[in-house]
Length: 463
Image (cartoon, rainbow, N blue to C red; front, side, top):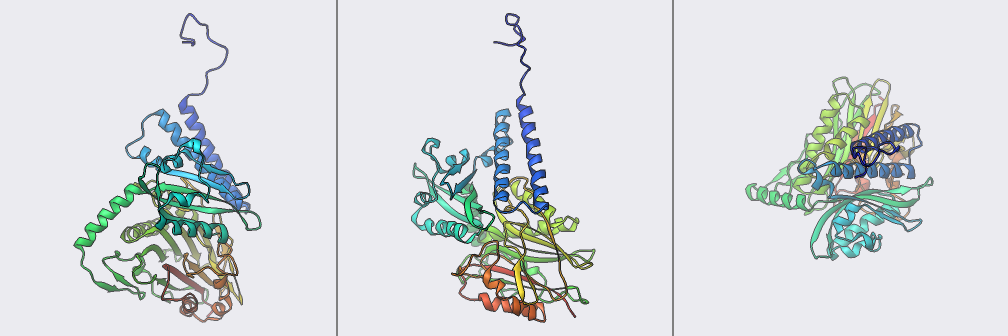
């Protein structure tokens, strides 16, 4: 043994190297520094496009390094190590054809690291035939239309076993809005799905089957879904007041009959100081588990909002709650705080479509501040943006799936849904939020829909 404690071998002049605890502490500090620089860049308006995705990926790599060093330091608390082994990350570069997989992803797929990661062309061949269309549609929507990725499928491993996984991610865009890469976080949710299925079967066996009429015209089959969280939301036009106050109208648009309910929601909460918090979002999955998870997330949003936290801090706290949970879940969300005094709208988003603002005969999607999907990146930061609204302005918040098909003449990604923007003259000319809501619903359709959607219209009163 060569050390200063062995009298047969004098000590070297080389100073002692860092301990394992020192390395872990350094990685923690580096992660904190990364968040600080990323938030400062986002606040300066330079953290968009490809830089945002690269920052998120770098943060995820540091989190992986922290977990790996912690495993060397000693055994993790029960459940934590197994959860870490069920999460992997990937990036596919369209410009260079390079593919990067984390070691955890190779483990999830049961693939040898020496065989290399799968390309996007190879990926579907690892899925059962019936699962391939969902993956293809999600990847196409990301690469062609700039949409966030959020889908679930099964992976057939080389040993013949099937693993249920959920993939969530975003396109990496260049300065001109073109997609140059796709990054994703992939979680193994096999055990979660097995336990959820058992719970659903037990619940259905005990629950009577009866339709229930909802306040917003939604008919829910109790065998398929728990009570939806938006049923307690305010009625259209409930908020009344003088010019400059906010008038609301909202609607849940269900998919065609027989489709399990999704985890999409809208909500409005009036705060004690007179401000108003608006939110829309989409929790991954379908059926009772998704609806129950949405109710939990919505309750957390309301509770955090009542503490006075701004939209960015609210989403950061919610991300910590989701990331620290036993079961992995991914959520896209948009949260706004309206201040009647001054007409200020402060908002933040987590992998969600931006609000549409209509003023005069013009409509546009507000530039999105930086923010990854909730539950995708540990300790993620969520930047805020503040916009000044004036009487007559109409704000439209919505989830994905508002229009069931993809328009042939344009992208539907973060630049805004072109058909919704095309409604701007009619929305601006409407005399109430209820009338604005009817314009949107008539345009996107109420029947024969392939996906659920939520839309919330906020109109600043002019009289």
